[in-house]
Length: 335
Image (cartoon, rainbow, N blue to C red):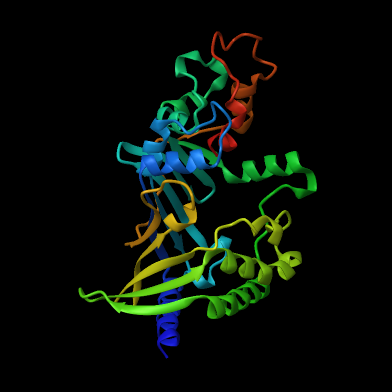
């Protein structure tokens, strides 16, 4: 009865989240720079490819905050029902990247100095860019810029032909199949328990062997791949055979039946790496309406590509002594 009771409490807590129209949460990587360096060393990186100390320190203090707002309860919402979405990656020294989708525009703001250190790729100084770079200079100065989503989809369609445009999403019938399959695996493999938090809260813990759980979850989803969006590829059982099978526990904090926080200890998955602490913490926050930032500069995709790659209006060598190698590694040119 304990397992059923604990599992039902957790299920109801997630159902309550789906009834909200606005949802905000924060994800915190609970680790330190030494642990990240140890994990990196255990992966046997190529000489010169090791994670820099500065990047490890930055990542160990990073937090991701997400807010989603819809016209309908989230469990009933489709893409067209979303009013706004906001995502921010922050560190103790300030915001690293901020991203919002409001109406027909995507808004982006980046701390390029910090991002360059994290990626290990030095970014150009704004004074080194030619005039053709246009609004890219605003990006490098940490100002808000915006993209027109319709133009982005059109550009993606032109680039990818018939495969371009917005990515397809799961239909409701397939979603129900996936949820039913996952619930079956969780019921078989996950051990639930409840503990009184002592401060009016209640803790529901869910424990399962990592490799067994992941292998079975993917095994249930694999027959449904044909119904998933094109391009979705799942790891095979062979890919997962070397994954650690240590038991991992997720601690769900409930307050008045609502989900308040989730803590997952991943240190056991580090195996031979000398990791002091490694975990993830998710905290639920009060939902705040995502708003369009004032004064954002419109970033034209054609101008951006000319500025980065050198279109016909740019003479060879206009970048001066700035080394442009590595620009091709930037994720989506900040989009």
